Length: 303
Ligand SMILES: NC(=O)c1ccc[n+]([C@@H]2O[C@H](COP(=O)([O-])OP(=O)(O)OC[C@H]3O[C@@H](n4cnc5c(N)ncnc54)[C@H](O)[C@@H]3O)[C@@H](O)[C@H]2O)c1
Image (cartoon, rainbow, N blue to C red; front, side, top):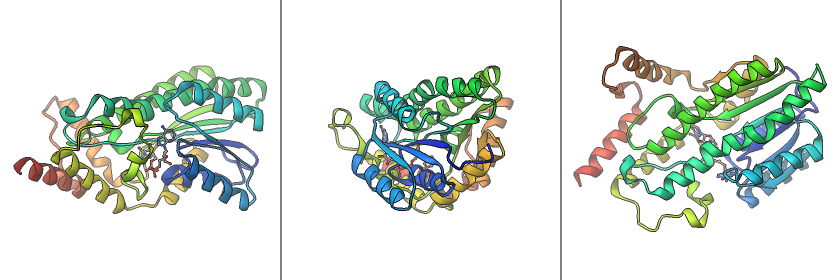
């Protein structure tokens, strides 16, 4: 896809961080926007700010884990703007600590937002995009799912997050294979950032009340959280740069979008272990943030 003006983009998790940056990048390209977030106040701020800059924007408070709410978002987008060209299934949350310490509520929350949220977006938007492609040879559609480098490697203290992001990478590849048999005009991509300074370290703010843990966090969970928050704040690339890189990747019709390619040796190391059938050791020295996480977890265990 190499022109964006007047085309329609949907962004989930648009109230903050990468979703907000993607919405702003789309508005700079004069796209018409449908923005969704579970946090109505944050959503309202970005909607008002983009409208003040002259963008045509609809906002809808949506929990992406709720399939019927995402379907209502797709219906609203169609009513407001007709066909949708770009869908960013971006909303996501995180948790940490040794995987056996995660509660059933942690699993429900992360699987709901990070995995089912993306699946809901795919189910609700893809049929309309394929119908638009069948009706108009000039139509182009792109579905971009936000995974993470944590979807391509594994590391201690980030178990559920990594499981959901691996699933989003697999889901995106499956979507790509299925779309290839259905249309040459609708494409999939997967965005795999490394650490980017955003508000994800405070993601508990959007946790639904019925999924809040009653037990306090363990020392190891606190250590994982502190390591993640520090790594995110020290992330070497801004959300705006990630958004611009993502639009460039869409222009070039790339599938894998890696804003921090310096982390790819970690992926190679993992696949080398898979192919050589050796025990998966992490090359900690290649990535100080993971070394810091490991050291904090070891210190918490020694307390
Ligand atoms: N920041 C990073 O270092 C990093 C790295 C890799 C991947 N990611 C991924 O990027 C995506 C965006 O995260 P971010 O870093 O911008 O975090 P963020 O917290 O700044 O923004 C996430 C937005 O998603 C919204 N959200 C949360 N749960 C939701 C739900 N159920 N329904 C709808 N909206 C919901 C939040 O309200 C928030 O506005 C996530 O999928 C995350 O996993 C982030």
